[in-house]
Length: 170
Image (cartoon, rainbow, N blue to C red; front, side):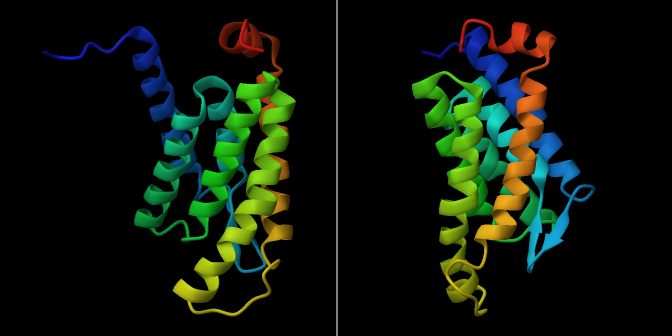
């Protein structure tokens, strides 16, 4: 028996596709090199938007997909995986429990800027074979994710966006 996809699932898949396309294509246009890593504020914008609109599963899947595509296209590094995925997950959990876009943005900043930055260290040291302090990525990751989180908050607070996409969820 074939499983029927409901409208909600179809909408989530469509929104995910658009967000993944935006994240992948803008990585070459809006990449800022900071302390040896490629920072992409759009990824953090997408993490917060995915967290609020789609929930934890889609937020993490979107972050993973964008990181994978960016690496395949040569526009990203392996460091994109821990930062983006942990940030997306924590942003989605914060939104799920607090139903507040500001809590989601804070989850992104803590998830990427602190936890993701610390998880990037083993990849940098043991997989890429480079040396750095354990806390080396906290500042550049934080700069990037704070910028992206602020952009997401501005976007999600636009009245038309808020009424159309978030109404009744917060």
